[in-house]
Length: 197
Picture (cartoon, rainbow, N blue to C red):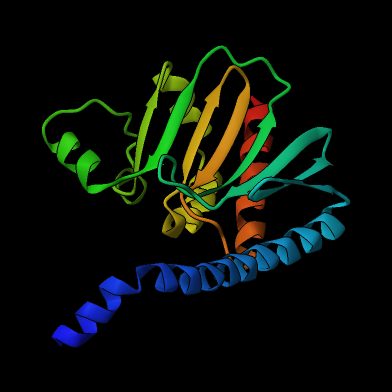
């Protein structure tokens, strides 16, 4: 055992040099998988892909709205994510945030932390809701919207609306095309509901 430790400590540079191609190969494989998914989504939605240093962005129009779908693999300072963004055309004078309930938010609820409740235990138990207009949020969360968000629950989504910008984020890079479909279809449903009001 001492010989192995001695060899490892004396050959750190060689180990580091061997480690770089392995990490690069893993990154390249993940990157090509995401690229394939984004190309397929671009074909499906008549969109355009742009590449940024370590990520891809898909842009397309749907029902007179411009959507941007992006992914980020994460870093030391920022978590990984997959995200859909769009601007809601109808002027909405309030903001809200709907996020998956975590252990911290569940404890906060028990200690009296304020959040909006809609009176549906299945939904209230899964999501934490905040906003500047409680009535607006409760009216926005129809059964159809609740069902859509519950389908996305396993990805721990966070939905924000502020200054008419809607962002639907999940804290990971999605690895399957059907998962991107689910994320994008949720954004469509939320925009449709917001435009109804």
